[in-house]
Amino acid sequence: MKHLIDIMELSVDEIDALIATAEDIVAAPEKYANVCRGKQLATLFFEPSTRTRLSFESAMLALGGGVLGFSEAGSSSAAKGESVADTARIVGCYADIIAMRHPKEGAPRVAARAAGVPVINAGDGGHFHPTQTLADLLTIRREKGRFENLTVGCCGDLKFGRTVHSLVSAMSRYAGVRFVFISPEELRVPDYVRSEVLDAKGVAYSEVLDLEKALPGLDVLYMTRVQKERFFNEADYVRLKDTYILTPEKLRGAGPELCVMHPLPRVNEIDVRVDEDPRACYFKQVKNGKYMRMALIMMLLGVGP
Image (cartoon, rainbow, N blue to C red; front, side, top):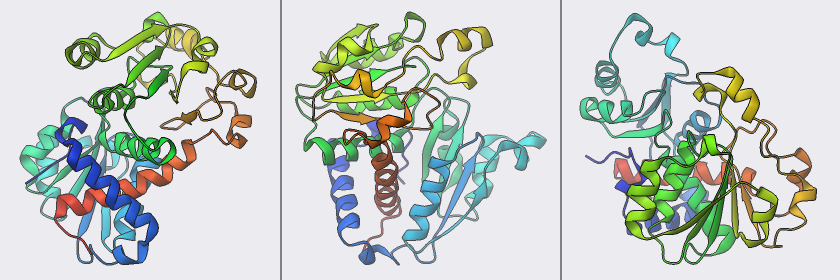
């Protein structure tokens, strides 16, 4: 039985196959309308979410399947002290596949060992968010036409940003990729990402403080919010939350083919005026996330048109 806990559990060939399926869904959605008829997806969200949970549910419904689950820990038996393993094992009796979000790193892997059905990590603390990375990869492929030889800027909260960690891991497998990390000192990319991914694979990267100066050299800009829920000290959050704000004025120095991305939700790190810029791709990411989750659900369940 296959699960998806970490994006690196998917080979490059598997990612290419998922992208090809997603592209076919975009072209001919009617082919996929009933491939999961009779199947149930359980969404176990121990942490608040809008896009990811609804994206999974929309994906399964578009495949003709059903959905069940909960959207906060307080509405589950976790509030009574039930373990993640027991919750997963029980829900595995009701559903054919599980998507889990949890604030504790490693919780979806614990669930995968117990569930008896495929488990998808929908985000575990500051660790991994593999299906967001699949959405990101489809967006980059559709906007840039390739993964190789791109310069990717990651800006904002690179310490706690699980979407950045997963994207860096995935993109590091493609030739000629270079990263520019734009963050304050306190929110730099974690040491393990640098040592275990970038340095281990010889991937070129630089760390800078100035977003505006970095923009002209980028093919992709991946903005992130400073996540209040990851801070133990509110004063530190308040001090850092407005460090980087992308505006139309700053974008004047960027190339015309720049792809601006954001995993959402945003707070104020992208000025709403940027939404009208043709380089803004973050709402396209949302749609791409649904298509990639549809492709992933089919792959893990072994179904198709």
